[in-house]
Image 1 (tube, rainbow, N blue to C red):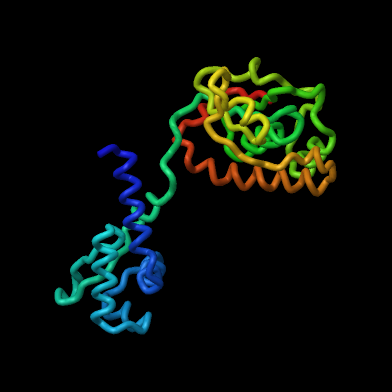
Image 2: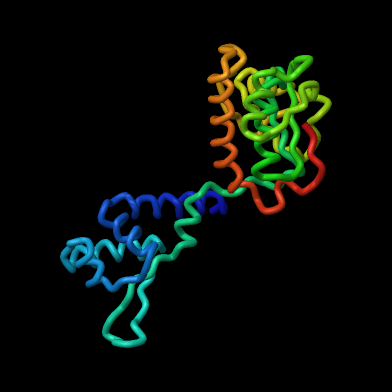
Length: 237
């Protein structure tokens, strides 16, 4: 059995164990402190036999352990295994030298994504376009400025001049992803974020929505990046 399949099966088992409201309530309670089965039953208003059943399911899933009291040896306490909950997160991505965000014109979404990554995660990051525009869109520059970020208005680049082996390439628009997904493409995105094009609408609200979408996605991606990825080094825009 592959490690990836084993991880998926383990996570599925844990999710199944958490699928009952009473078991989820037990886990919620144990996040903050340990409790005996009797104390847990009193807290949740559950009969002893039902607590025993739910605790067994949680133990079988590896979420809960039972330890003997150092005082009254007849008592046992339930304790959460927090690393099992932490393992529910998606597995880490393979190590990369740099993160490169790509959109069509390299004038808005990819620029904002690179600036956000540089500010929130750090390390080597770049952006590029499949058909780069001469300049960064003024509304993208303004929304970045409102959030304390800086974009170089003239800093656009072609994907072929930016992407190197070892880069984690993320397409942040549908057109760029589809341009680069074909078998003859020299650059293949590892991830695709279908962020609506704010230039089509061309309002401050549309650019703000794109910024928020990208910020949320970067917050979700960052924990999946293995330690040291991206490797520390000078950044480029």
